[in-house]
Image (cartoon, rainbow, N blue to C red; front, side, top):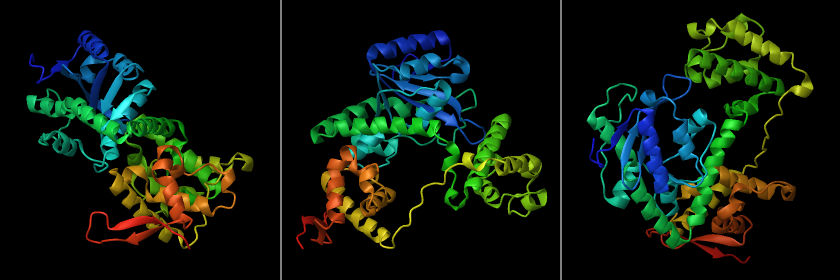
Length: 399
């Protein structure tokens, strides 16, 4: 394929090195991946698409083999990497290389910062900002199959073809609004979130852990480790070995026998019953763990009945603030973030605790202080015109 618009297919290490040299010389490039994650322990990386100002290319990981030179390029702190919804692609890179890039420009986050909806698909972004419609004809492609058709390759390349022009438009708008540093902070936070999720105790993300005792938490941790090892050994997704809710139910009940296990709903499946003894061994090990070695209970909040109502009021104030300032409210804060602010304000020991999410970074100046004013009665919402684009107003309140 000699036409730059059609892209080139990279299937050898020599051609990969040549491509990487050209990308590095350009100082900036875009990339995306195609992967399949439904049937394996870790996602299967099937394609890597890249774009610079002068060329498009598709890298075939299966044919190339060693991709460490590519991850070296992605993590080069002298280069700008442009992506859309970068989280999963960066997580895959982190799984394979143990590293994360220093400089990422995520067009999805940037779009939310300048008043577009968040999260917004790449197709909607290119349509709204560039007036370009993307095909969705290959959304069900199994990217593991070879050979790929020309239509499949063009569809894959569309994921990077417009990223650099999108980034240019969005960066200019961020500069006009004075939010480029805000966006850069969000990009870095996204990278740190991926790093924390990889480094932290992943079993702590299981649902409904608050209903477990400390010994139940130890059982959940050991069952998580057993499930993870079993999934890795069989190369299957962890939830195909055992669902999260069943794992937590076992940790809550702490069964002593196979009969106790079989009394649990959904346990009696061939894929699980053959592992009954291994599961009981994990539970027995948690039962033998000394008290001082058990995990700490997660922090529990005795939430006053009015917190939900106050959070709804703050949500309305935030929506008004975001609408007037042209920024996506869903990017700024969640309902959980608003409740965290309320709980912090009600805590008599708040000065000894870390600040809530909305009182840190750019959010503090954008909306945190304002929401605190509403919470403490210094500002109030007033209905102005229910039929207008801005139906309410935030005004100083004097009692």
